[in-house]
Length: 335
Ligand SMILES: NC(=O)C1=CN([C@@H]2O[C@H](COP(=O)(O)OP(=O)(O)OC[C@H]3O[C@@H](n4cnc5c(N)ncnc54)[C@H](O)[C@@H]3O)[C@@H](O)[C@H]2O)C=CC1
Ligand SMILES: O=C(CO)COP(=O)(O)O
Image: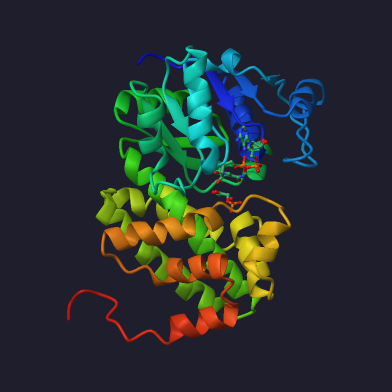
């Protein structure tokens, strides 16, 4: 593909808006699609998205629309709605008949009903269109404020990955190109599940040592499952793997970590989910991650415990006992 001069961003939430600002700062023509007409109007007239990025007024004028057709024919599309809505949006994009450039998957999750990664969903819904993936340690608020951030941008060819990087690069946003489309998705999906566990440890006030142990053992799960699924080792230890895991497992700014904190404080997952609230992708990915691990015959005790907290209302104390009572293991392979 040639240079990416125009980008269509689909999703008027926190991350979609932050990525539209990123493209604008890179000097790329950008149009943001949002489902909610009030968001479209506020972005266009007030340079704000108060529902998802409260307290931030953009310096950039963003062009926003509620017509999918108007964003579909850009040189590249960034798809930034929650993971479970990816199939429906891809199908709606196909209906426009306008898509020609790569579609970059920016959600961090696995399709719950099928266990498929989002690039596999895309292959079914938009065959013939190149998939890309953007992932890494990057809070939307930080990016919208122009704080320095680095992410991985993957595509099947280096040329496409580099063209996408060039269209997003600015003094505050540094994308690294990759051709590991599969591996770049795995870290983002699994770190959300593991961040719920770390949040629960923080909420139950189990201490910094426990949180660090859980992060390291969580990485062992991410690494084992990612490798079994075909991810490259450097991807798993890179920005989209270890980098994002460290960020999300250590900050109350993370919605997954905060969801876990509430579990640690004694709330039941069913109560939190029924109450609505902010998106915690890990709650949707936990069970499907465990199923994928079973398929690959990989042990993922932390993901499994999170899945049980989310789907069976296992309490934090039961979760802790389950993990601490596991049979002793070697940390490495040498015996
Ligand atoms: N917020 C962040 O810091 C980051 C988020 N992400 C990922 O980006 C994805 C989106 O997250 P956010 O923008 O933060 O979520 P959000 O909750 O701020 O916004 C979600 C947006 O998607 C829209 N939406 C939801 N379902 C839809 C559907 N069926 N059709 C059309 N629009 C729909 C909502 O109206 C809203 O505008 C998630 O997978 C998240 O893990 C990735 C990196 C950073
Ligand atoms: O993916 C993110 C940071 O890289 C955002 O994390 P949360 O969805 O947990 O807020």
